[in-house]
Image (cartoon, rainbow, N blue to C red):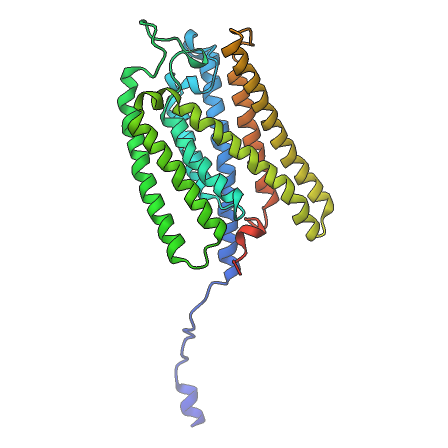
Length: 317
């Protein structure tokens, strides 16, 4: 028997290799790192192309008063593409349950509207048409209508999927359900505005989406400033807690001040008949975009190891 067993061939080990969960988690963490950093890259791309046009473009494009006005220049493709990509990324990134995740989702819904509905002629230093009409030029209206209907179709699919997840997943929290209802309400409001008040939508939807977009990001920065210290203190790293909380707080404060300055200057323009600095809208937008990029760099470093905040990653009990 001993000789017989010695002559038998070895049976290879066919035990399946199971990838440890830590490997999958690591890939998820890296995905979130790159997703956040891609937001920073999109801001850099947008600002670079706008400044390239300001420095070396046609003379009429060198002193436009807002970044949005560069929709009517060769920078249009980057302007639209960057904002659409930013919107998709904001929806994809998971925030803390409750206000933060809802704010990111709604901000992500608004960003493509800012991209696809241009600022009217006459705003941001762009000249009105020869007949004195300061609105979206007629030749651009068909593309705006086409693009917005595309957003509507995507929104219907997204809300249908979100509704299915909220209804079928019994572990969905109350905050998740409220966030879904708010996102659906924003979608319905813009859809009604687009279908019932088309002219006013073309004139004001760009601003109606841009202002709450940056307002929501400002609020998210405040939330992170408040949460950073508590989270790091629980981990026993008070120095890191203070550093991250300070940066988040500074970003939120700068964005809030930029909003306040913009409101004052807008009132002066409308009620006071002008007298405001040239190109002030552009510089407010630059401050907001740079602050936006700083926020995502900071959050990338803050969650470099974890990928997500504890409140977002932990299962609901």
